Length: 628
Image 1: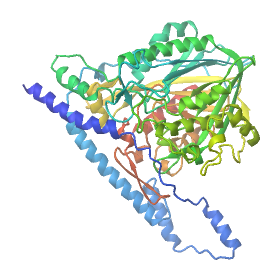
Image 2: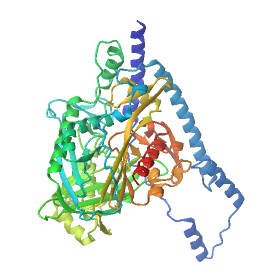
Image 3: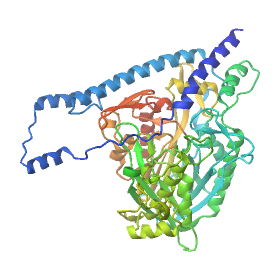
């Protein structure tokens, strides 16, 4: 009877916890009001004042110096504005109290909720024998080898289950247990396999139209391709996601949540049932099969050619950070592979940072959001296409420029955004006149001929500034490291206990702590791009630096490795948000000096915990040191 009562109480508590996480952990995507901001620096202001004969006097400079010292003492609090110092300090106090309260409640819940059989013993776990991990290349080159040449193959396949349309599937990203048999545009896996012709190994990247995939499920894909990989010298198998919030649930949180929690904590705990994962096994098998098939097809499709890089800052009109201090990489990166045989199709690899989450608002219909509509434009120009998520953090996409003043549904907004980004990708190195011609030659996807005279319509190519394109030297280096990371977020510990996800959880009974296994990667494409292959959603300041990194124990990635390092997020795992340790909060606020108000910050409800950022960065640094 005691066991039954404990199970009933556990179920009730878990449902109270998981429902709000599943519904609210992914923050709102409404457009924020546009705030007028001055981009004038202090130096520019002083110079302008001097030119106009105005006298500028520093009042009480000692007080300002004192404020700076106080700010430095509080990490990110440095400011000459007393209000800003106070408000940032207030935010830290609020967040400290919030974290403390959540941890106390979470610990109490964790004490009552029993572990299911999916939790493994930390003491008995041997990381080195944990299967289906690829280390990458055994040696790194410092310069291209003699006779080196890029080779790349491409393939794609649908990942919609065969019974989709008759059997309902759950959408992963927003409300719990929202099922549908409909899709706007399908779901796909897009795959490339590449090498530099040196014989050091082939590298595969599969990108799924999904919200995330656990490292344990990535290893299932690697297991399925292992024989083929060994035979064909594939030394790195990477699986990532576009992070669409309207795909089929691949993380287990949204699908059949209440029955699964009831089963796992009640029936399973009483020995009356097996554990039920929320990851639909039919969908997962389809993904394993299609990733395996596309890796084989892409390998067979490999051909020699050249690789070029172009990038353009698109932040002003197309990207938006929702959380202060609004530090992020606003560039769109385009890698273009051109086969030596000009009759063969080239491949565009695009990366920029944005949550594909718009279509999921107001529609319980499966969709890959903006991604397939970028692809439609790029395909029309004669190229294959793959999108790899960038340093995503809390970045969403702005739709004003692509909405063009039209009355649209949220999905229609995603469609137009995709079309416009597709044009931009193709037009990076073109003149304004060439972009205009291309706009119509490819089919006028945005309907400029029909809507161009409407008030509010903006042509994407107006006042267009082209960018340079550089050749990427044929040198591919890649290495990976797996490691154990603590899951100190008590809420995620509880979710792990329920067994509804596919994450591989470990429990250390001597310390009462939970852990999991994840991995990071490091890749070099010539000397043009360095890439951190990151398992989570990285806050932009970890890449870019700035005030948001004050108090953090490491420098930004660009301070350490240079301005050409970028991040491919959600690669080979989905460990949630990676926020600098000092600013970590599960449900709190960040003060925005620009808006003079607080931004709500609930992102790290979905995070492994407070020290995730320092752990991920330190493991990445160790990996780079081991190969350089």
